[in-house]
Amino acid sequence: MEYWRRLTEFIVKDVENANETKRASVIMRSFSLIMCVYFLVQGICLMVCGVWGGTGIRLLCLMGYVGAFGFTYLNRTQSALFYTLFFTMVWVVLYVVLFGWDCGVQHFLFALLILFFAASHESIRRKVSIAVILCAFRLFLYGYTRVCEPFFPLSQGMVSLMQVINTVSIYVLISVIIILFCQDSLVMEKKLVTYNERLREASLHDPLTKLYNRRAMVEYLNELTRKKAWCNIAIGDIDFFKKVNDTYGHEAGDAVLVHVAGLLSDCMENQGRVCRWGGEEFLLVFRDMNGEKALLELEKIRGLIERQRIVYKEKQISVTMTFGLEEYDNNKPIDLTINNADQKLYMGKSGGRNRVIF
Image (cartoon, rainbow, N blue to C red):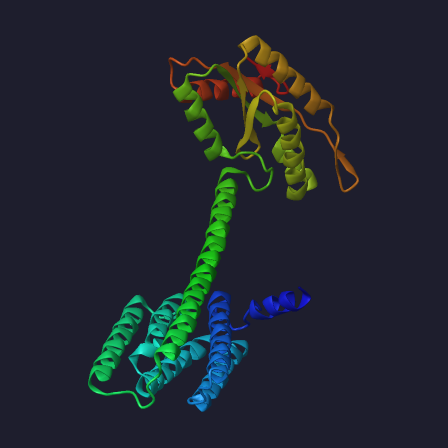
């Protein structure tokens, strides 16, 4: 098991060249490794059966695929791919010329085509061109064998053995290439889904306070409107926030916003939703309660903020908030409710601040 783990880690080793991909390298390595095993098994089986012809070709092919395997660790995967394409076509020609069409090696051209489509970075037009070339090449080999006899015809037993070895090898090759290609595609798809989810979450949250932003709240309010839900809307503003920035600095102002946002989020956790509406303004939505109950909850929130002492660089900062509260009438536009809450907020500002106007 330890040997298998190390071999797997060696095969899936990442590439360092920015123009190469790990998927292409792993597919190429797997293809080359399987072909090495193929020629070893083929050579052993034929020698056991007393067939020594073509031993030199098999050794050259074995060395050729070892070279292709090594190329991928030199960040030359695409070069190794074209080398494998040419090299495979050469030995297929030699086998067909020497042993005939019935030896079945021409079927490796199918695996070669799938390898090129899975591992190549070329354009679709170039890939289709390679497919046409391989198809024409296979037809040429077939035509050649109809006219010319092989130099070393195989017996029926040898043909059957070769067909079995070739069939198993080609199926293994194609299966491994497809599995590696699809597995990588699934991983990339999952990463893309996760990235899109994170991107959407980021687009719906305020980067400073981590509360929902205005866009997210508008979507939420539209959903409530469609459902004709019962709710109350409040808009709150931090009193004299500009003075905080002028006195303590903008970083202190940010710290105040974050602290207040945390308090609002905790208070609204089981009652509705809160968002940063803009600047030092927050919009709160109280679900499934009447205006009097929402007013009581909002007074608790106002009092809690008033009692807070926000520590920033060993300095204590106190702030208050003014709120405007409006009960939503589902027979009227939601924008009207927000505007009414906003007007009440400014009434509270004009009336001395640190209060809730309902």
